[in-house]
Image (cartoon, rainbow, N blue to C red; front, side):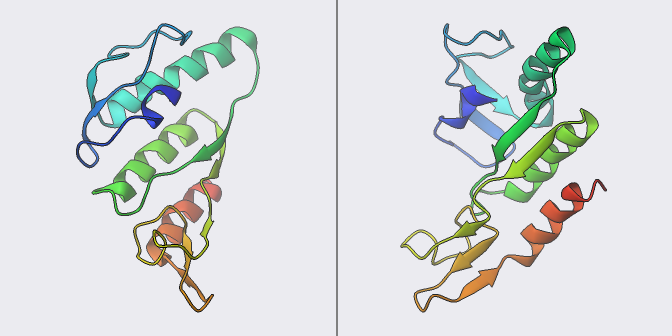
Length: 140
């Protein structure tokens, strides 16, 4: 899924994105280097690059970090779609920065962490995010 991670969102999820895939990528997938409609089906085609490699070489897959800024429209749906694809394909993962330290970006509920720190160093939980992520860590 590396190709689109660096792209600039032009809308929420699902939505259109400029895919950043290039000739350097070893995986050919529909839409590489083009404007694509990012949805669960497209995410599945990106994940197929990894699962095909796993199956061909008999190796495990582990996704080091997955996540999205919570202010992105429909970011919870994106998270559910990605984590469900991981579960269906037996792929382990860690969630993106679980805790966001105090900064101008983390004062609001729109940063990447499931916990965010206010200017008085107090952490606040994004309970819906924690619940959503936890369900997938538990294997539900």
